Amino acid sequence: MQCESFLEHQRQMHNRHGQDNAQSLFSLRQIPTTPQIRNILDKLVAKELFRVFIWVYQSLQRDGDLKPYQCLGGHLLVTLDGTQYQDQLH
Image 1 (cartoon, rainbow, N blue to C red):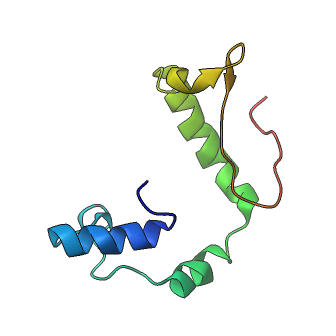
Image 2: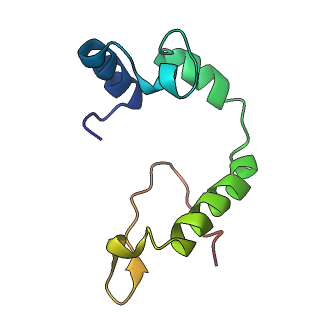
């Protein structure tokens, strides 16, 4: 992405093009603020997202979209953001 912050990227896109993904993909009238996003996400239990993550990962893997990111003997290079990591894929 062009910005460290997804929300900032949406704001810049809106300024440049008059529209952003929040509007076109999610039908939001305004880009949410960081505190609004935190208030929503803080209520979610991370474990509830594992199935979605695994589904997306398996879809990307099945379609070959992850091949360009494999290195060092077929290992997948991934950047993680968070305080804990638990390998749920194997």
